[in-house]
Length: 254
Figure 1 (tube, rainbow, N blue to C red):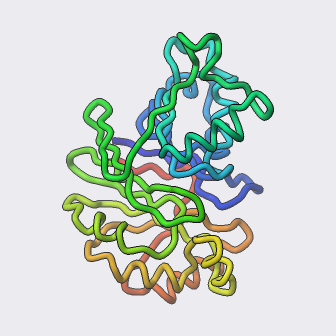
Figure 2: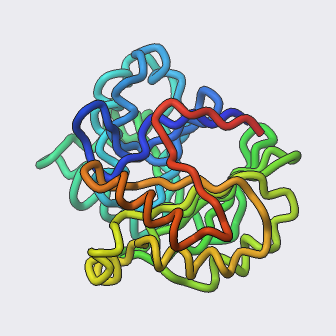
C-alpha cells in the first residue's frame, strides 16, 4: 500500500489543505481540499472514497470531483461511510439545492455516485487491501480507519477525543507500523477541545498512555496559526511517545 497525504491541516491558507489521503491510485480516505491538487486524470481513477464523518473539511471535494470527472468514468464513485454520515451528505449536500444528486445522474439506473454503508469493525476488502472502520468519539457520528496491507497496518483516528474503545482495538493490531492521530488545539484551548470533542496536547498525552504498542506517530489536523505552539506542547506533554507533525506530500509505504 502507498498512502499519499494530500491534506492534513485543520484549515487552509499558505498552501495548507484540509484532510485528504490518496491510497494507491484509486481510494481516498476523506476528501478535504487537498483533493483539488490532483490532475483530472488522477481524479478520474478514484473509485472509492472512505469518509470518517460529514464535517465540511473532510467532504468538501466530493461534489467538485464528481462534477469534474463524471463524464470521464464508466462506473459510479462509491462513497463508504456510516449511515449517519451518508444521510447528512444526502440531506445537506446532494439535495439539488446545494449540489445535484449524483445518485440520480445521468439516471438512477446508471448513476455517477453510489452510497455504501460501513459499520465499525466490519472490514472492507479491495484487491487484497483491508480497510476497517474503528471507533471514534466526536460531536457527530464518526470513525477512524485501519489500513492493512497484510505486512503492516496504518491507523488514522479521524477527528476524535478521549475514548477507550479505540485503544482496545488498536492494541490488538499486531502489525501496527504507523499511527496518525489528531490534535486540533493547543492546551490554552483545552475547554474548546473538550467541547468540540477534539484533542489538545495534554489530552493527547493521556490518550497515548493507553497505547501499548510502539508505532511511528504523526499528528494531524493542527490549526494553521497554532501548529508550532501545539507541536511544542506535544513534545513537552507526550515525551514518552515522540510524535512528528504530518505534512502535505508525505508518503507512507507499507
